[in-house]
Amino acid sequence: MTSAKGFGNNRDGAVAVFFALALVPVLVFVGVAVDYSRAVRERAMLQTALDGAVLAAAGGYTIAEAKLLFDNHAARAGINDLSREIALNGAGEIVGTASGTVTTSFTELVGVSELAVGVSSVASKLAAGDKVCILVKDPTGNQALLLNSGVTIKAPNCRIDVTSTGNPAAIFNSGVALDVKKTCVKGTQTIQNGGPVKSLETGCAVAADPFAGNLPAVTVGACTVKDQNYSGTNNLNPGVYCGNFNFNGSGKLNLAPGLYVFKNTRWNLNSGWTVTGTGVTFYFADSNSYIQVNSGVNLSVTAPSTGTYADILMFEPTGLSTSQFSINGSAGHVFEGLIYLPSRDLTFNSVSTVNSENLTIVVWRLILNQINWAIEPGKKAIAVGGSGGAGAMLVR
Image 1 (cartoon, rainbow, N blue to C red):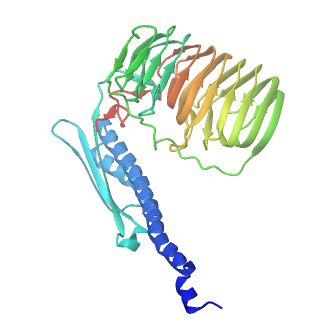
Image 2: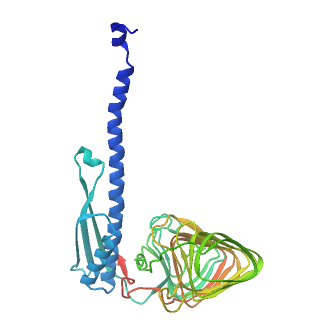
Image 3: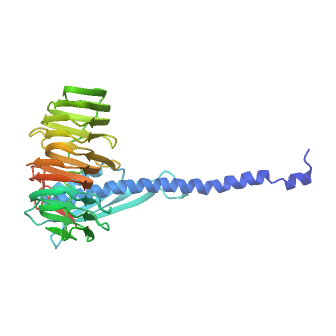
């Protein structure tokens, strides 16, 4: 039995009360962080919508059309009391602002029921005349473009644009031979180990990505083909592919025209395989999906010329987590169409030969090792000075 004196000296209850009181500000802090993260996410969506609208206006859309484009995209964000203004300023630039509020869940407990968000964007036209065949999107990464020894690119009518302002934004190692109209790097820091790179310009106004949010939406349905191993001659049809697919030994793969949806799927093409497909489009629904092209594969695939996926060879939705995608040494490749993989670190390895009169590549980062390319701008090339926002750049 506890005496009155013992009860007075007992601190167990006091510790529990103290802990409970201390827990309250911790929970509030966690809640504030959750609300703040949501506001940051919604602001990013608002910024993307405004960037797209001002780029469209700078590239040829009317102000009214640009406002409608913004309204359609911004509707996806959970922002209240949304207001926006898009107009032409005295310098010939398109200036946009947008603001609103995000309703809070936790910070309301401390008297804050909403958080204000606001964004601004300015776009202008780029000089006409160039077409971008390769766009590298990582805005801050070091060596977002890495060209190693043995890289030969013959593309006199194409630009390579690198968005990075990293240090260095791009590396050109000894033994690189570039015959391109221009390599445009937004940042000012590059490494040129083989001496001055022909037609390289730093601090350059790079083209914006005209495809973000503007490619066809794909509804990914139920799986139609799951985990398979193939050998010999095989004929595949469009559908939703799920799981792991191994193409063993040597064989031939014929792809019927249409849309191939990869849902948490990997195709592993081993040496000795020949793959052909005319009028095909590959859609990678998530960052776990890819085609692994190993050494000794002959891959010849071309995009449809008409229809919903006209001139689109490979694409993925925007906003995926960054992941790897490799195309290794081969018996020769033919790619025709747009390869739009804005969240991929794309690597071409060991004498990957590509000949194409219709190729556009948009990736997060690009590494080229021992490759030999001869390419021409295709229908999806990013036209500098064109319409629809493709020939515009964000100024700030």
